[in-house]
Every structure is written in structure tokens, then in C-alpha cells.
Image (cartoon, rainbow over all chains, first blue to last red; front, side):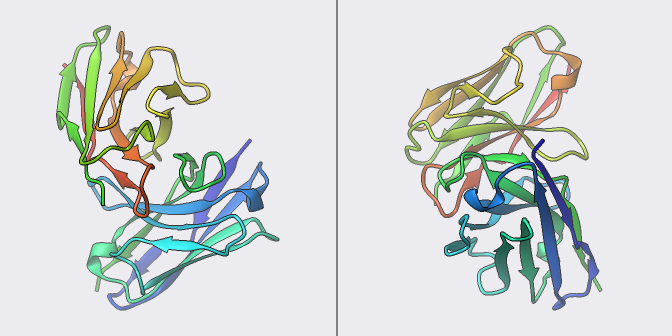
Amino acid sequence: EVQLLESGGGLVQPGGSLRLSCAASGFTFSTYAMSWVRQAPGKGLEWVSSISGSGSTTYYADSVKGRFTISRDNSKNTLSLQVNSLRAEDTAVYYCARLSFGSYFNPFDPWGQGTLVTVSS
Amino acid sequence: EIVMTQSPATLSVSPGERATLSCRASQSVSSNLAWYQQKPGQAPRLLIYGASTRATGIPARFSGSGSGTEFTLTISSLQSEDFAVYYCQQYNDWPPSTFGQGTRLEIK
């Protein structure tokens, strides 16, 4: 069974940092591009970042570019998102999601259960 | 950036009836359109991809249609477990991949 399990969320002050992780299992991790998608409380879905299977290419939403860094460790089947210079508007549930058929031009499937990041003083 | 617009924002339908949800893209996305279902406190679940292909394990009462800029998700004979929020997403042109704002399907 394909599973994605996020961790690392929490309460952080504006300007602070966190490192989110996603542990993947049940599939050959290195052959799939992966993404982070977030959802602010009571709001819709916003794509945040994606990374290729090898880790050689990455993409970011303009709203997080320069502050967030996506990475992966294929030896540990782990996806990460380093989030720096956090703002109140970054408060959201952050989901880890697999690109369903491996490459970028595909839907997200499956999704993890999400980890909540709250930015507040 | 392609803007996805869903309508209506909220749809009230009785169990057993049909629900029709719409999604419009600001420019053509070919058939690279997905639909997701999200229930309270849960992650989104892929229902439809390629505009009309059901994902694994999705019941046949869910169907998708359309191409280019106009898309429809139809749920025939609504079951109690179908009341949720539904999002469309284009993956034809990215970054960024973009979602609609969602349609809340509620019990009438």
C-alpha cells in the first residue's frame, strides 16, 4: 500500500523556520516526482513546490520562492520542505503528494494526511 | 498562470439525486484536468484524471467530461458519503499547477 506520512509541523513565530518531512512507503520512491500542497484554514488548495524523482529539478510557487526549499533523500524515501522566513499567511496544513504517474504533468495521488504549520506570535 | 473557476460555490442536492459541478479554465488545458474530493479533516482524494478517467477504486456514479476550457463532474444518485468539497486542478501548464476554489456539495 502506498503511504505518505508528514511530520514536522508546529507553532512558530513570524520570521521563524521549520523543516517538514514526508516518509514514503509502498512504491519505488526515486521514480516519482513529489510535491507539497498547502491549505490555509477554511481555504482551498495551493500548490507550493515540486521536485523530480532524481532531485535534479525543482519548482516553487511565487509566494514561497526564495524562502522554501524542497529536497529529497531517495536512500531514505523521504521528502523534505525547509520553510524559512515564515509569515502569518503561511499558516496552513501542508500536504505531501505524489505525482501519480511519475512525472510532472500528472495529478496528485495519493496525498499524505498533512501537517499543520501555524505562524503566530 | 491558468486560473480555474468552479461553479457553483455551494450546491444543495438531495440524496439519490444527481449533482453537476462545473470547472472552467482561463485557457485551454486540453484534457489535463483532475477532480478531487475532500471531506472535513481529511486529505484530498483523486477522483478523476484526464478529464474523464476514474481513479482506482472510485465508484461508477462519478463521471467527468469536457476538454479545453470547460469541464463537468457529475455524481449520479448521491450517497451520504458524497457530501464533501470538490476541487478541480489543471496539470497541463505548470508551474504552477492550479486548483479551482472548490464547490461545497451539501445535503438539501
